[in-house]
Image 1 (tube, one colour):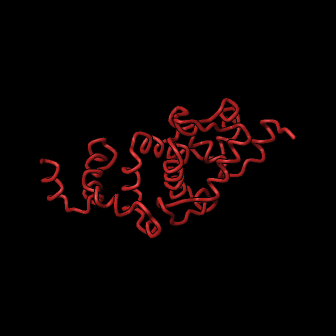
Image 2 (cartoon, one colour):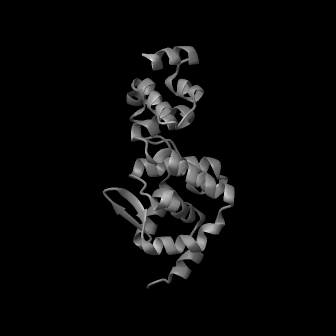
Image 3 (cartoon, rainbow, N blue to C red):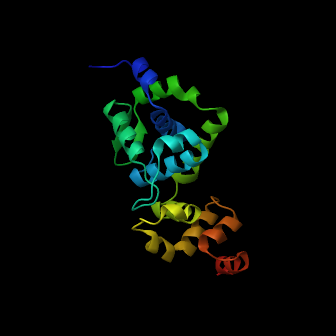
Length: 189
């Protein structure tokens, strides 16, 4: 049975709308893979309570993970609204049309936050994103298979985030596990 785009838009759960919104953000730029998809949606869910409640993130091998988000993404793919390619996940033309019908679900500040999270993460490496999430949300690291590896690289990764203008000097020092004076000395070297 085929559904019209209007029927799909009317029946889309809030989490599906959030995923469409994430994929549309940044000029419909790709979300580059499963780890970045999960972390971007996690940050959105930390800001927008209903998204966080619907996604129900738990600790996992790469930090916060949502089975509900993975299932919702799979459903959007099967409905022809999302395309998965080597470059990651993007909206299809039908996905854009459905997003246009449902985008008003989010308030202006929520839409802006989704856009900001996409811009924040879109040009970061997986390791940079994992460092940011692992240190900022340590309660999600207990199942992590990458925590030790990320912690070994935390100082150069934090410096990369700082040089890219993604975090303040204070946040970079925090991510590095250093006080600001020691961190400034590291950056000068």
